[in-house]
Length: 625
Image (cartoon, rainbow, N blue to C red; front, side, top):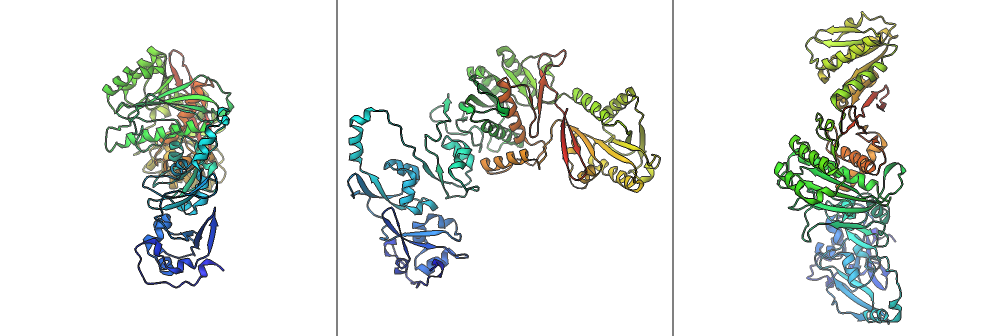
C-alpha cells in the first residue's frame, strides 16, 4: 500500500508535547534502523505542511521538531520520521545494552553539528545518520538522537593495553555537515580543509546546494594529500581576506594588519609540468577596500579578480608543488603601501601582483627591483616602467606594439583583395593613427587601396563604383557602434545584389563588446577584430570556469568586458607556471601572456595579441599573434 493513499483520521486537538502525538501517527508503518523503530510517512505530490498536519492530527511545531527541514518546504518523496516512543526529551543518561556498547539519547543543542556529536561519542558520522535517519534532512536544536556507542570503559582498557604501544593507523571518520544559507561547495570545502573535487566525490549526485541539506565531508585520511599550513596569522583572526570571498584550502585571511600568508601543498601546473620543490610564493597587493562598509565597484572587481586567481590555484592542485599566496589590502592609500613594503614578509615572495595606481605601482616596482622580486602590472595599460626596471612585467601589450602587430596582421589578411577605407562625414572617425599606419604598410607592400566617403550613412550607390567581380576588405575609420551600424548593412545589401564579390571587414578592439544586430552583421561579413583579450562565452573552457565560479561563490561574474574573474584565473594559471620555469607563454580563457624583453628595455613585456574572426554561421575563431 502506498503511504500517500493511507486513510488516516485527523484529530482536531492540540497537544503540549510531542509525547502526546495522535494515534494516527502510531498507525503509520514502521521501519527499524539500527535497533530503533520509527514511524515513517512518504510525502505525496502537492501535499503541504498543513495537509499533513491535518491528516496526522499534529501541529506544525510537532512535525518540524522531528523533521527540521520541513520548515524550509516539502518535496514529493520526502520521508518523514517519527520516533515510536515519541519521547523527544529523553534523558541523556546512558543505558547499557550489550557488553562494550552503550545506548544513549542526545538532545541537540544550538550550534552543534553531526560531526561534533559523532566525535563526542566516538562514532562515525555515517553511524550517527544510520541510527537517526531524520538527521539526513537536517539537524536542529531540540532534536533528540538515539545512539548506540562504544562503551568508554572498554576503549580505555584497549588504550592501556600493550597493543597501544604499536603503531595504529587512525580510522577514517567522515564528517556530516548541514548546509547553511548561501553556502557554496567552495566555502564548505575550504572550511574543512579539502578540495572542491574531494567534496563533490564524497557527495555524488548533489549538484545544487540548499539550506539544511546534509553533506558528507571526507575523513582526515581521505584529505591527507593536501597539507594546509597557515603562517603569521594571529590566533584571533577571523575576518576573511576579502569580504565574501571563500578561499582555497589553506589560503587565507586578512584582518587589520591587511596581510596573511598561507602555504598550500600539492598544487598542480598546467600542461603536465613535472613537480619541483621550489616554493611558488605570490603576493597579491590590491585595493580591496576592506576598511569601507560599502566598497566601490572597482574594489568589487578586484575581489572578483582574486576569486578567479583562487580557482586557478585549485585547478593546479595535485602536483606536490608548494604554493604560498599572501594578500595585502592597499586600502587605496600610498601610506598603506608604504606600510606593506615595510613588512619583512613581502620580501619572501617571488612575484607581486600590483594595483592600478601609478604612484603605488612605482613604489612596488622599485621594491621589486631592489629585492629581486618580479612585479606584475596587469592593470595599467600605458605604463612603460618595464623599459627601465628589470623587475617589472608589463601584462598588457603596449599600444605601439599592439598597433604594429595589428596593422601587419590585417595587411597579411588583405592579400588578393582590394582594401576599401570607409569614412562617414559625421562619424567619429577616431581610428586615424591606425588607418594611417595601415595605409603606409599597404603602400610599402605595393597594395593599392580605395577610400569611400559617405554622407549620413553608407548606401549601395556609394559602393557601385567598385567592380562587382572584385574581392574587397572594408576598413571603417570609426570604432563607434552607431557608426558601424550605418556602414555594415549597405555592404551586405550591395554584396548580395551583386552576387559575385567576396567581402570581409576589419574592425577594432571595442567591437568585441557589440551584440544584437551589429554582431549578426559582423558574422555575415566575415569580420576580423584585434584585441588584447577575448572570451568566447560558448567555448567549453569558458563555460567550465563560469560554472566553477558560480558553484564556489554562489553567483556568476560581473557582466562586464573584460571579465575580472577570468583575468584572475588566467593570471593565476600563467603566474604559477612562470614561477616554475615553465615558460613565459600562456594562452588563456580570456587573456593570454607571452613575455619577452623588448630591444632596449630592461623588464619583460607581454606581446600577445588576439585576432578574433567572426565567421558566417555564428562561428568564432581566436587567433594568437
